[in-house]
Image (tube, rainbow, N blue to C red):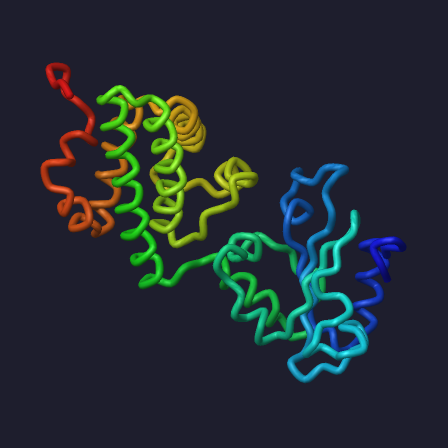
Length: 258
């Protein structure tokens, strides 16, 4: 198979399914998100091999070298070939994609599905660490944005506001022990799996205004809600470390001034 003479997704799945050393096929990306695929969307597929596999799917060098199909790309297919052990360790930027992926083949009596499901949840300690780090980063970008708006630097204020929106989303998803979705799937995710305590339409609208305009008052009002949520979640110390600078971030009373 080559990019010049690509195999279709259906034909590849049939070929891989016929190989007993292929123990899992996992579809990620647009085709795994109902309603998101377009005519431009390829099929992003993990091919999971048994740890002791000697299948010809990986090419002449065998699965260790992954010389044949790992990294193969065409208009129809985007393949990643891994062993079970490698698949189990996958995380980081791939975590959300795996969390919402679709298991096409599972020869491990549900083992592939269990690994996929586990990607969708951060354990309590990890979630707490991520939330604390992203809260501090969010506060830092918010503070810079509001200060830049006050001091007459509108471009800097908008850029910092855009940064703050990204950190905020990571924070809010970490508070729910979930990986942040890619921007493409943010609305899709929230419409189907809302964040507890947040109205999806209102949150998306507010984040859009923050990213697009850097409006300082909108950011302050949003921060007021975030502060309540993170203090309830046990992260008061992160905010308290900001001391008097919190005054600039919080919603302003009618008689307040910068």
